[in-house]
Image (tube, rainbow, N blue to C red; front, side, top):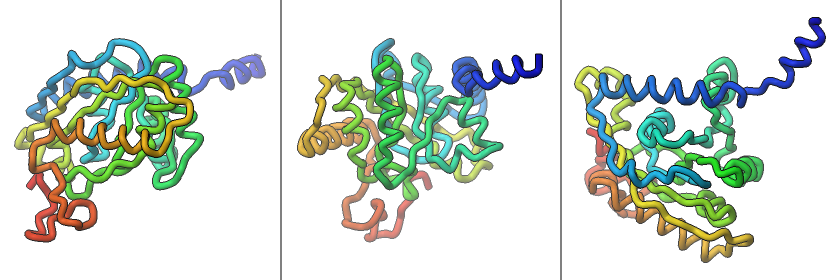
Length: 242
């Protein structure tokens, strides 16, 4: 009896519980956001109801993935998450939320193949093309991985913009009900390209960047002073949330 139970349990994966856990946490978070912040989402009608989808956004805080997922609402989004977050015990939440690991700042073929498998089944994934959250609040340079996956899969790209979440660096700010905004832009439809060229990847990366920036207030846009991570050398002010 124990052996049979062990065998059955061995076939149960995190993915078995992920869908109900994801939706439960997402709607719980939606309710919480209505209470603790001034929260507004625009453009939800732009979210495709079905088909392979890559949701992309600027990145201000570690809490952005679930907040963006709560804003999208109409699709279950599987986010890439840095591999360090999968360590137990906290990693159990990340796994049940159905994220998948990526090794940042290197060419992670495994993560790319996982993303393409999800998209091939008509799923939705979430990516922050900057590769990490902004330390300044300004949108940083985009990495080409998102465009490469989009071109290879032919998935629709949904550009989004987030503002206000950088203020979560100071949790006490919630007492003032800060403003969080999510803007969902028009989808970018693509045809699959088996072997995208560098020029095609660069062009789509620029297109994604422009689509996100078009939805951001000016104070979140990099000042282009030539300084690292968009820090404004002229006045030393690197936080648009202040």
